Image (cartoon, rainbow, N blue to C red; front, side, top):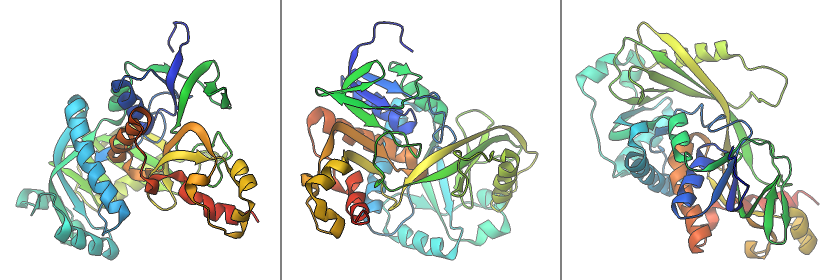
Length: 380
């Protein structure tokens, strides 16, 4: 925590996962004075447990495909340019893990402009019989970043406050968080308890688990199959993860079974690769947030009470242009990236900077307000 007198900041960011850290870095590079808050530390939750792969999303045509395609290109350039010491570039082998995914993969392969090729005999010899016969795409360029290392590097020059935020106050055009003050506030708190009455925001928590291992098996590329397996920027260490467990919640009294999680990760990895002499050296767990429609979120938040008071017929399904909603002033949410947080973070942070610094409008497709009309209709 900074020891000097607390300053009035331009921006306060609540949440120091990859979205919060990348936003803090990008806004500070644009000349803003930024404060970053997180009760647990830098990348202490789902971001720290992420595999942090810079991989394209295998999907057919649609809005998400367009966003992910651009985000993937921007992320590769961002990490390799600004944080090469935390970025390992390797070919990427994506193997379909179901007939449905095989269909999407073959469609993607026909349409993509990303360079890809056939795998060589050496790589094929490492695969299990199951993995070697499934549909695949082998990209010549992929990357994985050191999740904890890159987040810490991003905020090295940012004022960080390890505080638990329980209340947000807005008065006279200024947001107040404890003793901190700023014109703008950014919420990047993932699936953790909301700080405002915004129950309409469609989020789902996804529990992640990643293990770092040492193995005598040489892994020449990044692999995605039933689970992700990759060499890392740390010499000799291989990462396996992260599992997606939509059933476990850290907000219950039930503890997470790490041992069982490790077993499941290794079982899934064994369906892809023949790993020898495995020694688990560390594991990481945390909660990530995905949106209910799988699109990321970036934009202002609707003040639900004020908007329903202004337009009570929203409860009966009446359509109101979103520009007419009442929004919390100078407050922006960045959230809902799911398993692609490290891919989407530079893309979202860039557009956040353009919005706050340059006054450019954010694409409405990203707005959290897209969930509001359906929620409002259920309030009747």
